[in-house]
Length: 286
Ligand SMILES: [Fe+2]
Image 1 (spheres, helix red, strand yellow):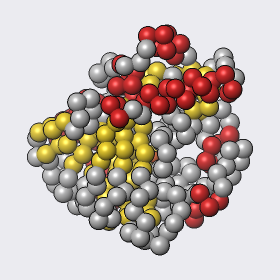
Image 2: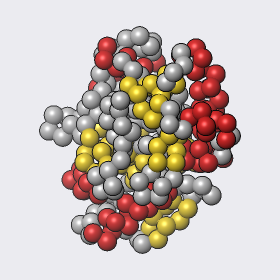
Image 3: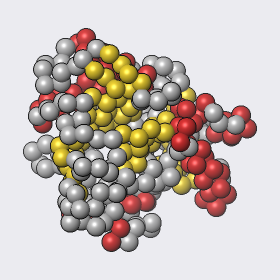
């Protein structure tokens, strides 16, 4: 098993692993450590079944149901993310975000498999919230360390609901939930339990305001931080191939699905997880 870094700061491709074979303890601990070290790991040429997808997810944690986009009744943890060739709407996951950070317990990560990819386009971008923390001005570190941030589920609530025509996966995504508008407080800075590295835990889709400051007073600070997090130097871009798997840490990265493949079909299968494989860690909801 080998690790090949994708950028100087984070992300790695893993080779020498066959995920269609039973996952040994040795492979599992290698993958867990690789995720802790690199935050986004990529495995190519892995045509895996739904059952094998579950088995891989269990390496990292307990499969998690997305309450706003649950899968079929038989396996609600499994979400098929599909954009048909004729669809002209926004894409599911467009805009920088960490998944569901407005929940009391946001998922710790996801395992995403590509089933059908466009000939070009449809890339996914990630940014490292640890790299963003490391390069942050000391005065801003002082402001954020130990502070909490309010998150709200804007796209899923009522107060900030996007126009219908901008909503992706309308049929399978729950919208208009008043509970999504409720503020949930999480630490602005998280410390990874394995590597001890600190990372920012804010994102422009869900973070609303800093604890102790109004939405208006928080806005310019948050805008500055969002721009800092997503600088090219803190980012990487995944070009998908069919049967590729990407696993990401949802507390220490943000991601962005690029909607530039009109006229082509794209189908992905995703299972999110709550951390259990590593020392469990989660932003503690207040
Ligand atoms: Fe996402």
